Every structure is written in structure tokens, then in C-alpha cells.
Image (tube, rainbow over all chains, first blue to last red):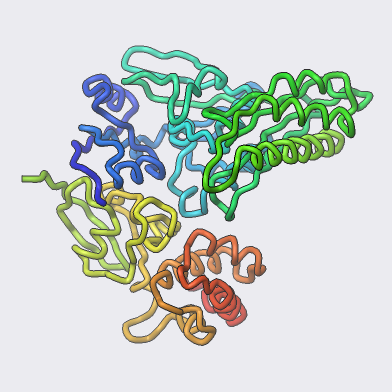
Length: 290
Length: 162
């Protein structure tokens, strides 16, 4: 099918975009990379009255160092994040996860903010944002608020964004020394949505025990899931054997995976266990290598 | 009457000024308004890849872009690879290695292969497979496509082409 008719609005600045969003409210949709929205339009699953195309707002696309971490403009293309030297130096897990989003033609167009605002439960970046304790700068006409990643994802394709709001920037805190971070997933074909994906971070102390652990999974529930229990059992433990096994078990217990044509819930639970262990093992190696 | 928007596209080096409805997909404008029917329409939701073209030198799904969003862009389609009746060396390699098969996925396979070889003139088999994994082939004949790209790489068919 073909997209329905809509009023096409092309703001040149963020303020212009916010004014348009304020005017049209719930009847408007933001168009960023369009790699999720345009299929929905093509199938007429969404029929907004107005599309606000923010692609010409050049100053919404950037990657900057900020307080030892990063600030990423929402319109940054996924491929730009993947090949950013700043990302590779500061938070290589971001590049690692980006590389697994769709295929190269999708990542050329797809944006970081669009991916997060679309909130697909199988998508990689939302889980990474949860694990990195990201904060989102959300703006509206005359207003601005900060939202923690853990409060952002509210359900399948649902976020805490309100009509009129625009996700403008993603802030990622820096990581302490001796931290390893990894993203691993299983997909049916390179570039497909993950059946299960795991984002994991470990910070080791001088004795090589886990000082901090952060674990988030995608594809195993209506939103990305932070496995807090699994994080707790790792603290004070050496990152191997029984401790990793216990963490993987707790991580699986935190999931509520769907069954569909691509795999049963039971299969996804097995994958969650396996990939949690694998991600943590990779973390431990990377943390030790610092 | 649907409202149209004036846009400029440079397609295969030729400038076009068009008036398009905002909801028109880039692939439909290429095929219907510019009669460049080498780019194919498949799934229209970004999975099959048959509509892949290069936009400002980067591969993109032309079914997941509005033509208005491509205003001012330079686009390369399969018609822009060869010169008139003369095939591009990459196309020659596809013919020789039998990477063509039914032909439906071929234009997009050529575009992603062209992009890959531009950036990486001697890719490994795995890198070729990853690049073409963006495109579905319903003949499931990926092996001969991989071989075609390998043949083109061995002949330096794309290096320095643009």
C-alpha cells in the first residue's frame, strides 16, 4: 500500500518544530529517519494529519563529550554513531550495539532518537540506554524536562513522551575505570530484530571482584528490562562460574518473553540465560584489559 | 486536489525538477515519474531491500523515504551504473558468475555490492554476505551473488569508480 495523505511540514529550527508540534498536538507525528514510521504509514497503521519532518534541523545531529560521558543529538544517524571516534573511545558498547541495528541502508537513515522514541521492545538501543543509565532531554514549546531511560519506556511502542514533545538529546554518563561493557544478541539473519539481546556492564575492584553490575535485556518483554536482581547477586563476587550462573538465572527470572513465529518463550529464556553469561564474560575480560 | 511540492533531484547525474505530493515514496517517483524502473518495489516496509539506491553516496531504502525528503539529493540507481548499452564491470561479473537469476533482487544487489566495493575493494566472503544480507533473494541463490561480487572484487571492478 501507499502512505495516506498528510500535511508535510519542514521546520528549519528546533523552535519551529516545537511550535508546529504544539499547534498540531496529537494529530502530528515527527518524522526523523523514517525507518520505522514510513513502514507504518505504508501499511496505513498510522494516519497522522501532519508530518513534521525534522531532517533539515542540522543542529539536532551531533556526538559530543560531556562531563566524561557523551551527549548525542537525537537526529544523529545510527551509522554516524557506529563509526564515531568519540563513541569508540568513550562508550564503544554504543557502536557495538548500533552495528546490529537493521542493515547498513537502514542505519544510514535511521536516527538514534527515532529508534528510542519508537520503543520497539526488540530494539537494541533502548536496552543499551537502560544499562548505561542514560538521561533524555525532552523539549516542548516553552518547556524542557529530563527523563531517565528507566522511566522512558512504558510499553510496546510506547514511551513517556507527551504530544508536543520532542526527544532532543541523549546524555550518557561516563564509565569508571576497570569497567567492561558489551552488547550481544541473537537474530535469525544479520540485521534482523534480536530474538534476545543483552547489554551488560561490569566494574571490577582492585581484587577483580564486581563493584558494580548493570544488565538490561531486549526482546523478552513489552519494554527493555533492567535485571536488578541479577545485578545484585554479582556485587562482591568474582565474575566467573557460579556467580555468572546465578546472575543469568536471575536475569531470566526478570523476563517475560513472547512466543511467536521466530521462537517460543522457552527458547528466548534459554537465549537470555546464554547471552547474559556471554555478555558478562566479555565484560570481565574487557574490564581486566583496562 | 492533492497539494504538490516542488523538488530537485539529481538522478544518475541528470537534474530533474519535479512537483510531487509529499506522501509519494522516492521509489515511486523514480519508477513512475522518471521512468527508471530498474529499482524495484518489494515489501514496502524495509525488509526485502529491492528498492535500494544510493542517496548522496549512501545506500538507502527508497520505499522508506519520501521524495520530498530527498529534495536536493544526488541519487544513483542501477541505470546509472553502466554507460548506455555498456554494462558496468560489476554487472558483467554478475552475468558471468550467474548472480542474476530471476533478476528481481539484482538491481539492489548491485547497488549494495557497488557501495561495499567502493569502501572495501577486497572484502572477505563474510563481509560480502553481511552487505548483501540487507537484500532478500527469492531464488535463494545467494551463493552465485557472493561469487559475482568476489569476481568483481578480483577484477577491481569498482575501485576508484567514483
